[in-house]
Length: 95
Figure 1: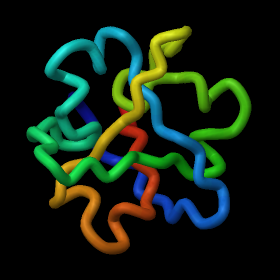
Figure 2 (figure 1 turned 120 degrees about the horizontal axis):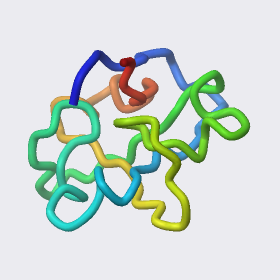
Figure 3 (figure 1 turned 180 degrees about the horizontal axis):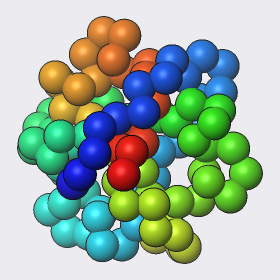
Figure 4 (figure 1 turned 45 degrees about the vertical axis):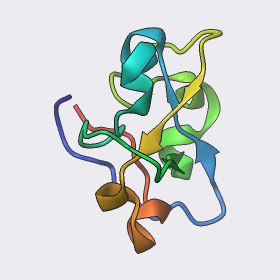
């Protein structure tokens, strides 16, 4: 994973952050979409702001921006990245 998180407040947009087959397959599905740490039992689901989730951008992987296709694993956040108001911030990684 490279770059930093978009971080904009999601507000009422609340688009689901998705992962492509490469980023969400197998045990990687249980890794945080922002920092890569193991999620554990927290499983806060990642969300996208209106800018990052609008239109066809909502069908792109929140980690690598590849097209998700029919895989559509939901991005999850660890306790550190999803705690408190950070769980209401866009989790798309900037290149």
